[in-house]
Image (cartoon, rainbow, N blue to C red; front, side):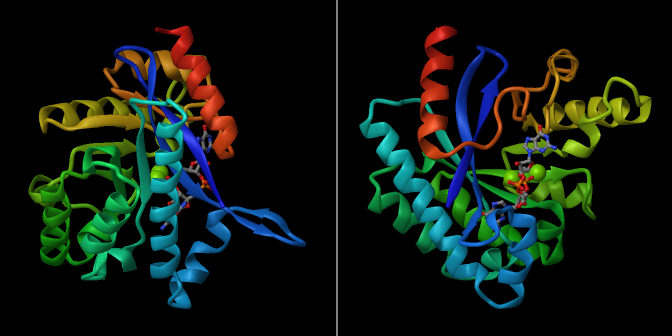
Length: 242
Ligand code: C2E
Ligand code: MG
Ligand code: MG
């Protein structure tokens, strides 16, 4: 099943996107989080069909919300490295969008730095094809992988997601604060928007807002929620700040 975690646009205090996060509803183990099964799916060769299911399900959910009157929300979906190697990725993204009557601007795809750097030439051409569709591309967990700033420049990406490991101690650890400040300035100088992940407190929120961070995601705003709860929260929040 998918849960959805809202993203807040700090410029106008509105929820403008959700990230789809997969969970496994296991009959005995309960709700299993992705860190316990994504790598297994990758090793077993199941990540491509699983990833396609996630993409299609997320698009179906956005369509359902649209039909219920919810507008102005984009869907963010995580990709695995294996999916990025599949020549069929472009067609399956296009297929899901068409099937659910969505535009490419409604979809954002998240890849990690290590994924982007493992085979840069191939990644760049795959990402360019997705960009040509009009999909938004984000680098997830930025700052934690093995990355080359020269490739960063060549990748057709639109957003960086500042990893939550830098956000947790932002008020108390001067080095984490420096990394966040530098990442904010790097992303803006490169014309990218910056999303902060893992924002848990009001103090972290203010700090990141002062740094000029564009979007914010974390428990402080909302945990990843089942579809109906996410829908109600977005409606309530955006009605309140209108
Ligand atoms: P991610 O894409 O970086 O997702 C953010 C993770 O941070 C989520 O963990 C989310 O629940 C957690 N998080 C959000 N806000 C906070 C906060 O304020 N504090 C803390 N401590 N954590 C917060 P989750 O759902 O367990 O997902 C873990 C990772 O699994 C994701 O990291 C992503 O890399 C991967 N993943 C999730 N869904 C999918 C999927 O559909 N496909 C693929 N390939 N990977 C997925
Ligand atoms: Mg992500
Ligand atoms: Mg992340």
